[in-house]
Image (cartoon, rainbow, N blue to C red; front, side, top):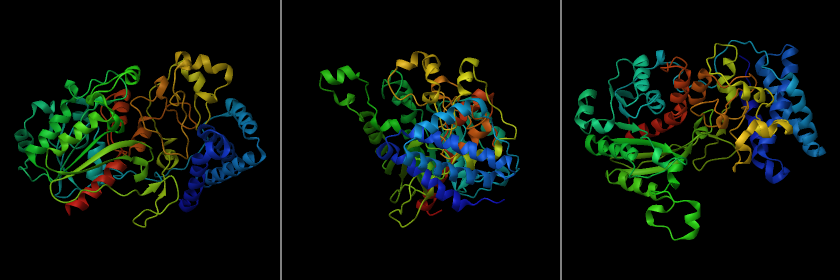
Length: 483
């Protein structure tokens, strides 16, 4: 395989630099820069592939030439002239380029396949297991999974298909005693190395009624704290949505916020402060922050709020290994550039891919969206019809009619790639990202089976913790525990 990683890394840093300074330096929005590069790269890569280049050299050449084209367009001040010309050409010529090398992914998951996985004697117990994104990171770091739990039958069947020897409690955790957890796992109080879980966080989402901690749906958080107190693991890891940090115990409308003084439970962050109080009541030393999975090698930009608690010792968060910019960290390391969708999935294009269909009314518009583009890149006379009622809504609406870019990490994968406001199309193929590509983006092993029909698989994979992130966390926890 002739893959010049250093050359690609250099080109990625240059590309990311353009995206970061697009608005400030060039008065051009980031989305237009991304789509301009996507189009120019597609045309150059097509030429090289047609001339007989292999996909590696063709892709490197194309990205380098696209960046040079961008510089010229900026210097000549004809960016939008070139961009509009390329958009028109894509609408008649845009297709999946023919690349036929058989190869492995350029960035394999932390566990390339479950057949090669071997654990050790260090233990992890999992609550709210889902598709096992958080747990797989600990498996990759060598931990032995002693028990899994979820209320969802699809989670149970997924775990049983892949690791049938792992005890699984299919039940709402509030109905499961700590004695049952310990008995089924074969472990005594105080002997579990790590308890992990992501308690459902519906009360703190940015949508819906947001009724707060008194909502019955908040009980999983309370149950997670109960289990920590009762089984006394050496450490615990909890993950939540990043929006939790600013959530309120009681939602109050924007109009009310302007018209009267807020009560303590209505203040921004009041829900988060209550959860901190709950976690600190365990007596564990606690550290937390919002971590971006892309900073730890994931081919996906996805923020998660991570808590690490230690029964003894000083907890620390993992150090970043990847970055959007060239820098030297406080510990003297120089992170590599973020990993990209190309590196994670380009080998899957001509293998079997399973995906769900897109309605004809939306598909006809997606044919016109360029690599890295979205709804704003549709022909002007079609935009209002394509967007429907969302056209007059507030907000950027960047999830509408979105086609991904090869040379970025994927945005946060969602539970369905074909909903109008969260569309996730392949950079070139006229289809959404497949189940197999979702797994790569999330860092799952290729042979990790997900139970259910495709829409269920998307939901399970999309709601999981990226495995590259959980692997970085697991390695740090292992270091803290001295295991």
